[in-house]
Amino acid sequence: MIRLKWLLICALFCAVDAYSESKWIRMQSPNFEAYSSAGERDTRDTLRYFERVRDFFLQVNKREPPKPLPVYVVMFGSEKEYAPYRFNEFATAYYFGGADRDYIVIGRTGDQAAQVAVHEYVHLVARHAGLQFPPWLNEGIAELYSTLRMQGDKALVGDLIPGRLQALFSEKWVPLSVILSADRDSPYYNEKNKAGSLYNEGWALVHMLQLSPQYASKFSEFLAAVQSGVDSAAALEKVYGKTVSAADKDLQAYIRGTQFYGGLFPVKLANARENSPATPAPMFDVRLALADLTNRPGKEMEIRKTLEELAREDPKRPEPWAGLGYLAWRSDQNTEAVEAFGRAYELGDRSPRLLWDFGRLAEREHPEEAFKALSELFQQEPERLELRMELAALNLNARRAGGALAILADVRRVTPEDAPRFFTLLANAQIQLGDRAGARTSVAKLAANAKTPEDRTRVDQMQRYLDQADAPAPSVARAVVARPVVTEDAPEEAPRMVRPPTAERPTLPAPPPQIEGSFVEFVCLEKRFKVVVDTAQGKKGFLIPDPQQVVIVGRAGGKVDLNCGPQTPVHVKLEYTPGTAGTDADGILKILYFE
Image (cartoon, rainbow, N blue to C red):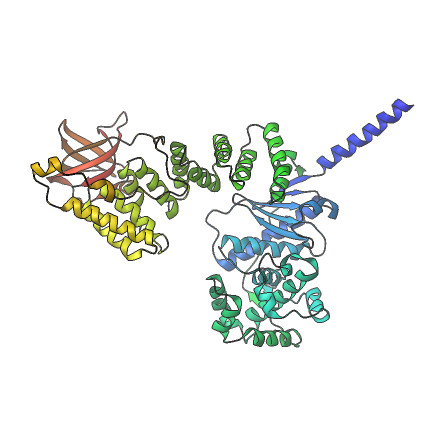
């Protein structure tokens, strides 16, 4: 009997444990993926609503994000389950923006689930639009749009929220100056007994600024001012000519008024498509998602243990290794971080964040791996200027000036913030290639954009180096006794994002083959071209399958117009990829440099 009793208890606990895992379901809609312990019906309804909200914002913004991240919805079936993952002591839901995926976490379902869903989705939209707002404005906008509902063929935003309005009437009014100055560490953003005032007054103030006739016409201008870094109080005075105390009085009068306004958007929301059937959620993915949600300062040991267990559980999954890499990096354990990132990379992680962070962090000890990772990222994001500059720096440090120039040559717009580094890299590439006239132009642009003493020192060094290079050659007798002066004033090595290289720095992969000679003919073929060069080994031809993939640098950095047929012989250098079987050319042209 005793043995039977223990067998029954064991069976009962095993069943409970099995249920705790099997109750998590996975469900997908066209644009969202849910991991939920809240039940199939609530999960399905929530995903349908998210699809409609997404449709609304796409129509209002009139464009879709260029590369939207996967959006994961994590839904908890009870307060007890939600408690360990709660963002703060009062949040019933929250948005968590990772680099490789977005999470919307919902700790409560029911009547207010739709309103909560819209609120958190607004945070997602704001993040991907690059909007950086103070807490009152960030939460106020999200709460305003949480009232979204259809009214005929239009969407209405601006319904009053009874709970917030009642709190504004019944609770002590917090001066608007306090609400506007609260940052993310403020008690008014984090403590349960104070944060309500920020959410309530933030919602009311946004409602007044965006929808009331007195303020609405300049609301976009106000948002732009705050987004540019202007303090909220200063932005009110700059845009509306209102002091904070005057706006405070207007707001109190507004919420006690008898007339409120809403915004109508002419959109037509399609019926959400049917979600995929609910299936038992793979517990590996559930645990990985929950680890992401708890990966906060102070919980490093707990998260490390979970990630290490997941890495052992499925050695082929890259996500645990990426997580371990970021844990190590956060603790300044850079060697361990590079090792973990490298493992995630080997296992197939090609997310932009991992490629960028792994590439930069590996530059010192493993430049060949850094170059490979950043080159893969370049295939995904060719317009990313900071990435182009990082690749150019790696090329220059490996004495591959042609590769650096190829990366930088077709950049058409440089911001004032990026200009000093960009023109430093460009000038270095031109100097290494012998294009002193082009380098002088780049140094002049660097001088015009210099912001720091280091920038101005670099300008002086490059100018002195170019002056010496252009000076008349010394006599033979003087050359015998004169000391070289290039070392002191030679241009600096390309700026580095991590740490300066050591004397025993590994080298990057060998540069592509180079050749020089006289450019004698430009052959125009069907949909491609061929450059013919008369070299010491005879005439050689190099194909141009795609002109957009070739860098052609003219004399003194100027442009060159190429016409079909024989050319007046001119000396050129070029880099190329060796030709492939079946072609009548000696290679594929990469860079053509006129001297």
